[in-house]
Length: 484
Image 1 (cartoon, rainbow, N blue to C red):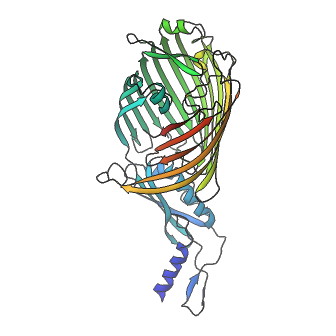
Image 2: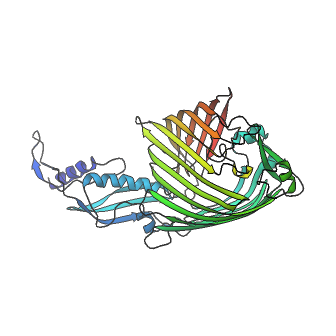
Image 3: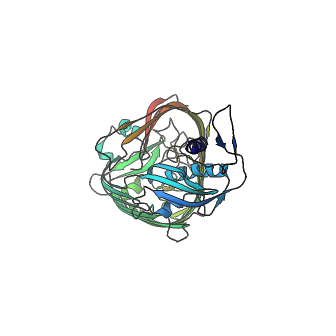
């Protein structure tokens, strides 16, 4: 009978779990007889908090324990009510997954003694060292390279790179590139999340140098125009930067950066566009000061389905006539579940540069990097101020996993695949006081479409989108994101 009662008690506790979490109600309060069944122990509500006696970590062969506990919003000795403890378990699991250090994380109750509990954190680490070949088109997206540049190999960067994540077990990262092809470049960076005992301050450094035989010297018809020389280099550059970061709690991080850039262009580039460097010759060098604030409260950073994020950037580039730009930009997103498998997303972006009179070098805005509108992948819209709003409704359509034999040491045995269907719409506006021979600035821009998103391990996301813009154009566009 004693063994049966103990089993029933643990079964009752297990039913209080949420997903992969295990939580413990207050100790046993009384015994009852229910419909003639044997005696069982039931649990009565109690407002007395639990005390976290210990946090036990398993599976961290490389990662230091303090890096893991830094992401957990409770510590040894904390007193928490049951409902708070369950929420903190899930939040800790989410934060640890967002470090991109682990394939899987489980946060659960290990044991209890009265109102004292031991918490168990089990992690399965990723593979951290990637010496990989490098092959990447230089164009802004795959469609531009495939169809506008006819998949020209002359517009490809190739070489080798080494990515070493979690280098010392402190979630620090080393990056080294040796790139040839379109841009001949050497690049090195090192980023360490925490450099102090209290684990609030971090630091990073980066350096790169290289050259190009082709330069985007102007924008005509809202498309980049290039100048190419198969003999001499048209552009040589060197950049270096240092950065300090401050993360007091968990969700918000502040970054303070200083960088220096030196760049020299061939005279033929300046002759083609005298406004490229504001008429100050063919060489520019300038310091850059940056402040960035990032707030992340997402369930999974690489592909969020719920939560919020805000990124604010303030940048001062140059201090004289040759280069003088103050830029402020903000990007915010929200994701709200509307059913078990569906969610709504909004993404807003805005940016302004002053003074408005800027050389071509500083006018890039829409269509570069992650700042783009779907349906306008073949275009760039230069300007000094503007923004957009994106909205979408997404539904998870399919989820499965498969095994890859012989890869236990470098990848998880089961490779997860998730497929989402999505409908979306975009609206934006870019202001350019010197529009020239372009037509997309200084007017409202709209687009809509449908797409499929495919996600998998190592933060891989492939987006296949069929977009329509207000110019009456449509097409299928590919967007890929990965940690590599």
